[in-house]
Image (tube, rainbow, N blue to C red; front, side, top):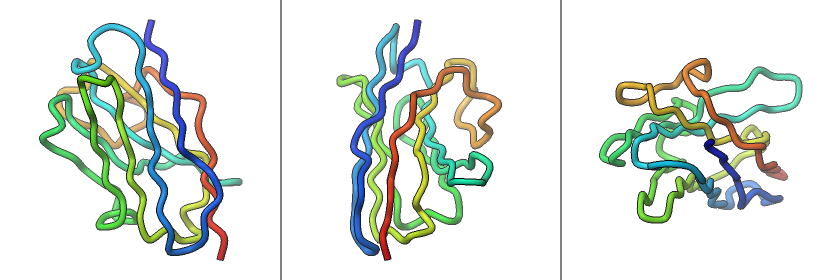
Length: 125
C-alpha cells in the first residue's frame, strides 16, 4: 500500500519561498510518476507540476513555470516542490500524487491513484 505525506507548508510573505516535501512509503518509489496539485478555497483542484520516474523530465502549469521546481530523490523516496516568488494567488492546499501506470508524466488528477493529505500554503500580501 502506498502512502504519501506532505510537509513544508506554512505562512510566507509575497515574494518569499517555500519548499514542500512529499515522503513516499510503499514499494519501488522509482516506479511511480509523481505530481503536485493544489486547491484554493472555492476552486477546483488544479495541476501544478509533474515529474517522470527518473526525474529527467518535468512539466509545469503555466501559472508556476519559472517560479516552481519539482524534483525527486529516488534514494530518499521523496519528491519536492521548490516554490519561489510566491504570490497570494499561490495560496492553497498542496497535494502530492503518485501513480505507477502513467506512461511518462501527467497533468490530469484523474490519472493519479494515490494522494497525500495535503499541506497548507498561505502567502500574505
